[in-house]
Length: 454
Image (cartoon, rainbow, N blue to C red; front, side, top):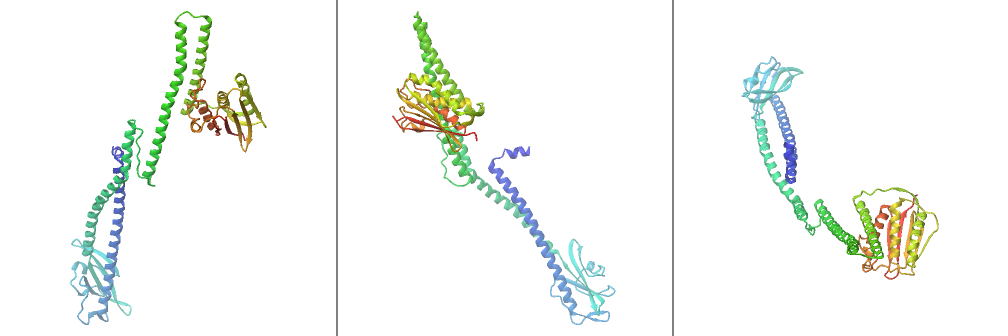
């Protein structure tokens, strides 16, 4: 349940929470470290003070045999230190205002001890008094550690107060920075919501920066540009496709209505059936190409790559177009200097060349020529289909590979505008390229580069 609540938090709160948690851990570790260092320094310093006071007491005592006494009135400079002098038998002699509990501690070796008296911690240090190498007595010095306890307690209080205060201020600062950092994200979200309503003209137009959000905004705008262009193209494609299909359907409908409207001669019925047949073939061709494009867009087209003799495929295609070319008084020639093998999908490759040659015949006037050649260049096969047709204007050149784009819309025998688009897709699919060189009224040259089977 807690994990679910955390997942449902806004990102700014998650960032603040993680930031505050990390800061809390660091502060706790840091405070423990500081506390231990200060505690160690204070305890080490009091040990040093005690040993120094013991040496001071030793410097002013006198000894005769096993008797220890003061020759002059004694005084310890540090009033926080209390001492007592024992004889060799452990009997207390000279002493300052020291607690009886400390005096009664057993004597016997040089050592530092901690004792607790009435809930107050004391440190006690015993050191022997030597005469000619013999122990003749003991000096005991002690200090109360209450001031250290109080100092460490105050340090704890300061830490316990400062940590929540730091956490509060840091959380406010973290939330402020998170809001500043995520503000562009909110703007992107709002813009995306507007776009989801159908307004594809919306753009972020944020100031260009090199940080993550700036790059995200630039990428988002670029994606929107491509998306808008793609949707416009698809809408145009759907509109043009419906128009292309509407024309043959209208012709078929008109011919059928006319044939059914009354008695007709056999010749008239035959003419009507021929028109219906031709238009249905045209419509079937359009649907077939649209289906191919649709499958390519969805990535569901099934490919079958194999090693192919490119020369033989082209020869067969040219033979199929010879009768059509003769009817239009167009001369087709094909030459190849060497045999060329490539790895390709035969159906698609055949469709590529059929579309290009059909396009060349369609836009070449009576008495024209179409020259086809195959050569090798580096690791590529170069297929050139050049005609002496009407050519392509500079205005049309950037769009000839767009779907359903038609250069000469006034021609009655114009195509569907899908042939060159499909040809380009097939060339790209085979990791090749399709280029065109053309000038209006000067013919066109289509150049296909396909990788060899090396």
